[in-house]
Length: 597
Image (tube, rainbow, N blue to C red):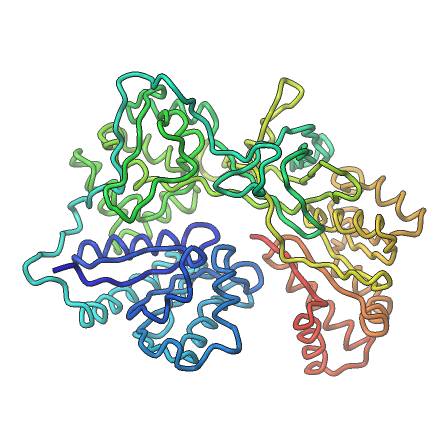
């Protein structure tokens, strides 16, 4: 008799929702239940009407937006013509992951829960609201919710009576087996699946374009605290096209030093070739890995050894450990009671997977290679706003990259994988190629020639607006208003000469805010208030569109507050009417944001 089946669908931006979904899959297997785990956009959504039990795990990104890998599902599920009985045979539960420091905390999970009820679905449990801000992270809400979930699921899908539950300390079978080759194959060469120039299909995550890097230039002053790069790629013959507001995704690699250290700690031969074979018929091999593949390629381009490990990493590592003392500590870190200690050891100092493996050397040296893909997540692509227009720079694509580096209590500085990797590439030393592809962004600019555009872009948030201004000027649209914020005029005033030249041609009105050049800090929201009458005139009388890009933490709320104040002081609206005015701008796409954590 086949095991009872249910479905877990996830929408994940940074990998947390995927990790929780895979945890559900593992816990189902331990309970002898069949469980399919899929990204929402890879699941044929019309099949939902045939699913008896579905668990949705979804993150909320930016200002209440769904993650990229559930946007198609999101559009479909909110179609007005769907009947209210469409999901009347489905039992469901929604687990949300968010951050309570944002206004729209877990907005996607709450809205999805309501929509599934509207379509006739029956909720097993109230929606779970995981919170990054909790001192123990999302698990503080997720753990007790999952305990209740399993009680309900096992009531609906009793496991086969003749099969006992697999206890937590016993490792589940690995997803893949690595079949080591004794000698190199005589034909074929190792490499990424890539889109070749002249290819019919545009580049994508499964087939990126290896774009030659043309230049990699630091654009902040030598004494500035942050290294920011303007990087240019040649996309001739790639089939890539983009418009202002679009985003480029870049697939980074681990540093050679980290790859070597990882192989040493695990006792792996970097040149060893292997082929990958799934254990289960419904599991496919990762498209990004060639067959055959070398251990060096796997660790360099696929395993995210520089990421901060999640609790699931410690759970599996404890199962695989043969060293009594190390196993004891790993079990403690993976237990519900040990989450505070795990946070202090791992999350607070941002300790990486590689560093953890170095701290548990006996366990690391005994990890069976078959478990590498279960233990370590895949490197995720990083998204950057495109900072140039094809109308101004044909066959070129430019990005503005702030190199992430900061100190914790650990001796080594913490470095962003993608930004540090990009900064290390020097096209002056020889050809450099970077795997990339493009997708539509969340900003769309008006096509009507006379519509004014107000853009607020502090720091690297100005990148998409440079693309927009280049594109609009090339099309004869000159009513461009840019509020740009940085610290110092002579250190991080990106594209100063370009803006000034556009101002002399009456193609741009630039309003800079230099936060550190006077005793009182001045930010973009202060400049907006100073020019409140102009902002109100443009928005209310001239139908302007308003755009905001940059860090998602406090700046969007500060700018929204400044707008509310302008609507009241310059527009004469009372507070509720000002809030309704702002909401109307958002609803009609005349107020758009692109923010990142």
